[in-house]
Length: 245
Image (tube, rainbow, N blue to C red):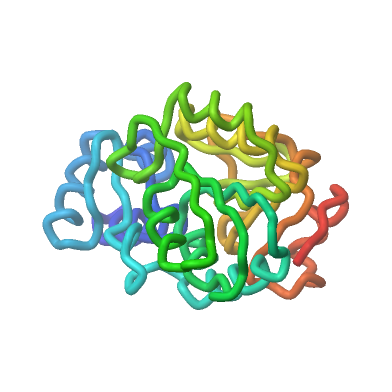
């Protein structure tokens, strides 16, 4: 594969998933990790990505103006907002789709949000009627999310009406998966503390998987994509008993 082709593939993976690992890119491109490392360095120097330890993240990961597939994520957020009701306790993870959800919440809605995501919490604070509970812990530089046992312990003492999970990888065989073990523990705890679990994902993230399992499909009650709910691409998920919006 030519360097230009590798760069195109790398950029596409980062746009879809926001963050990618060096080892995964090496396997995907069928080249050495040293080659991928050089590719990431070159793309970083061009300002197209941000190289981080063990991989890279999108330059638009925390920038509203540069969010990949922004229009589609707005559609997902607008669908998700219809599930919100006054007085609810809502758990919400980080991620660019959940950031859009936080941004678009109606100004008059009185509701409580609980999140380990610094960027999501900051966006929620723009709404004066929302009570925001930030789950503090060791902050990840790349994801701007609080991690560790203190977050998991706090979640074990909470009960939420609904949980909005930012989704990195989802398929009907492996369920919801991630590449970061600590993030997986946070999401597991959020699911356990919630009465209703909602997965938010652009369709490009469907039928993909990673190394660590968050949950089986049975743990997800509702899935929201930008697609029409009757789209045939969603049939395998519908057959698993998941409500599609």
